[in-house]
Figure 1 (cartoon, one colour):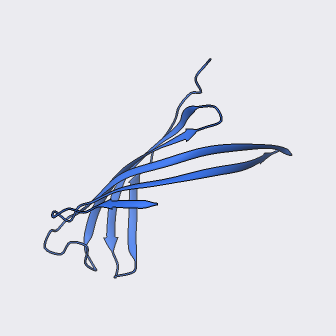
Figure 2: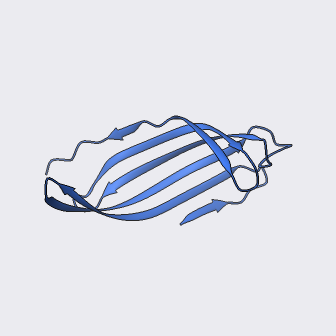
Length: 109
């Protein structure tokens, strides 16, 4: 589900939460990974006058930690930022300039 926070500045603040149950096949060895993902982000129009209209630009940034429930640790931290373009009422173009993924070491017990 994706939830937006309404505000008067026309800035989109959102939380996109989902759950994955992954089936992985590596050399005929099957494993599963249950993992929730929670992306928190912001989208800011570059022009308040033409905000969210066709042919306008906006910036975006988000952070998404990805947790492993089977091993109980955060496996990945995804950080994105970029520039977006509103093509028309239906379509948006996105130029994501940075998408580093930080793989975190599995904790030792």
